[in-house]
Amino acid sequence: MDDAQGGHDGAGTGAAGGGASAGAQGGALPPLQDDGLPTLPTGEPVLQRWFVLAMLVLAPVAIAVTVWAFLSIDRDPVGAAERRPAGGPEVTIARGDAMLSETRDAVPGPGCAQAIRIIGDAGSQAAATGALAAACEVVDSDRHPELREGLVAWIAGGGQLRVATFELSGVESSTRVEDDRLVMELNAKFQFDDAVRGAPAVLHQLALLSDPAWPGQPVGVTTELTAARIQHEACRTLDLGEELPRGCRDVEELLAADDPVGDLLEVGFRDDR
Image (cartoon, rainbow, N blue to C red; front, top):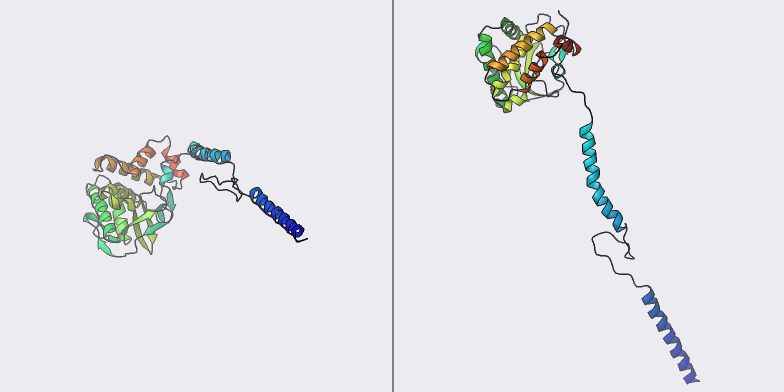
């Protein structure tokens, strides 16, 4: 009986051991695929390898196609007149919003503009002074009486000059009524360049200030055309370096247009013909 029982126990133990061994062999996990891609606990890839490789190839192709499509979009070119639009009854040229220096220090202007106050930090003052000094040389030549008239009107209006960063970056200068003063603004880009290059933009504003109807009405189209011609001459006669400022190229394009008067009327200048 004991032998039989022992045999039975041995057989049962052997069967259990065999079952455990078989179970271990049946439940063994396949080796992980060590290629850097994510796998499931079973060792199978989360994504099929061919799909991952295809995506790696298609991604740069998709980026290239997107860039090509963006560059291929036809855009309406912005004309020269649109880059210097009329501002309205209290602004000569629209410049959008502006970032101004928080420093309100003031120094007197140079030469013909000693009654003008230049507002800003030292860098802004230096750039504005240089541009205004070069503009005074043209004013003092008396070739254009409109410039002297504009300067007188600017001084009578408690004139100030400051440097600002314009929202409409193509605009190089603008004048506005602010706190009952005539404040001329010069694009801050001239602060990082030879200041003389800002002189044509200052002369443009001086000519606009000769319009007797401004402030009160938008600048007249005849006044703007005169100012454009004066600016164009200054661009050719002043030493502005090899590459002319953007405003000089714009005014040349404007004067060469088929209908500059019509172009200026479309951007808000008053019809004073």
